[in-house]
Length: 335
Ligand code: RIB
Image (cartoon, rainbow, N blue to C red):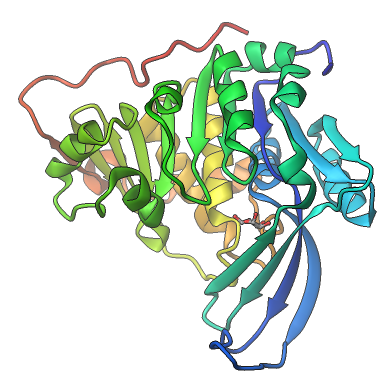
């Protein structure tokens, strides 16, 4: 059972130790390369997203599983240090904490291999143990580094907004997709779920989303290009600010955490995506998934320096109807 005071955000997902190796060039098949540096960092898409939202000031609870090992201490300690409630991040004897082997090259490109370990031992019953927190949260977030049944259990319990970041990508059934309020995907994930690539014509995006039975609110992250927001028949392009990039690992997780932060504050979806784009951009300035995650004042400063929304957005309506005033279909509970 989680704390009596309800969290604003619950993240259900993976916790890893990231074994981060800097190299000049990523090795080709059969090639051996020498590392420039090696570090262990806290990671895992779930833990990263929880950390990002907490660093921006939200009350966050994390539901996950680790082994009973040093890796668990690293991840749990990092989350707790940011104020994340880790009472439902439990250790399982006989399992190893998840690991990710992260190679980062001189151009800040990365390759990642995840060894699931204890993340694969997270089951629906563990999610049900956090029912009070999940039902009272304004936003619940999940990814796919844990079993799909776990994600389904979290979605079914959610009374606020359910945000799904289907990474690593896989096809999901329509019943689960119907429970998703906001889907956050990169271009590769969009292609897996929609069956076709993100169109260069924004006006075509809503019909692709509908044909694939994706949720009414889909956010496509475009790396250094920013993001596209597809909300019903309206598509809005949100550009990213130019920043110096050291490591893009975890930028997508920072995006999701910051989006959850803004949605928990009842920001409209496009404003929330602008906030998330700025947070994700800032996060790329340091090595490690969580090292560069910004604090609230840093995002506010970067956002204030951006062109106004009206001048910076390429907004398209595929129909002549006015957009729905309700930003996202399901209502968030009152806290
Ligand atoms: O999204 C980045 C994360 O993916 C890393 O922290 C790694 O642990 C993998 O889960």
